Length: 287
Ligand code: GLU
Ligand code: ZN
Image (tube, rainbow, N blue to C red; front, side, top):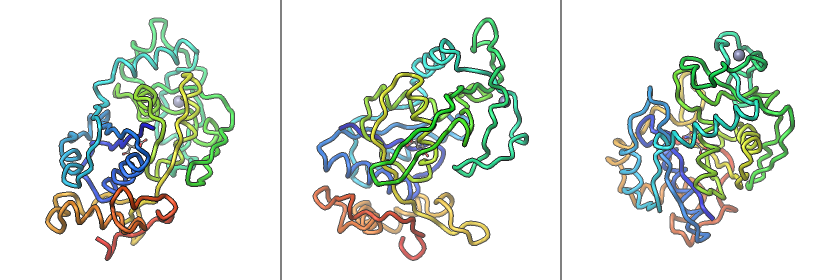
């Protein structure tokens, strides 16, 4: 059993990120598995480095077996683009965001596969240095229920649209990088926040196109905070790690997060998914 915690390196460690790390780590350790950290730093425009995340994991006493830096895996990502191109699945897309008005299951804008028939240049996709590339997915339904019973079934090509696999600025897109890296790291189990659940069917379809295995998935509850308009949203702004360390020791916060999750404490022996809450929860008054 090999699992991973895959935070984006776009900011400080927030309680929601630390909760995810704790659940990944407890799940892997309680099953005698391996747990790796993958720093997802492909978005160069927002990257602040992974050092603060690693520091926060150490502070919590969550020791992982290996750290992988996604930006160092460009050769593997490019090879996947080559394979998609060779299979006739890669195409350039010049549509603007404004042209997309239909809502996708993840709350973003769906893409109507408008450019599907656009050809790649004769010299290949590398010649397109300032154009987004998408992968043409089969118009098939993915039937999938995750380990927590969450139904992730979807026809991603139609409900969300073909995914961008390389961004206009040249960065490999999340959907492709995550699939390639999970396979290369032989990940068998993926535990992550429920906000990513609507992307799973797209990732499974990319796995099928690239002939890669599908890991077991489990999506956990989210920590919410009150955002603009008093709406509860995924934790973003409040309580960064620098604020947390003034309120708690690492061991205290680790137990606090375990309590919020429904566990007695954060010891490996106390871990049981059956006790972990399934509903999202506001951190107000809890942290
Ligand atoms: N890097 C993604 C995020 O922090 C998570 C990727 C994943 O777990 O699949 O939202
Ligand atoms: Zn397009």
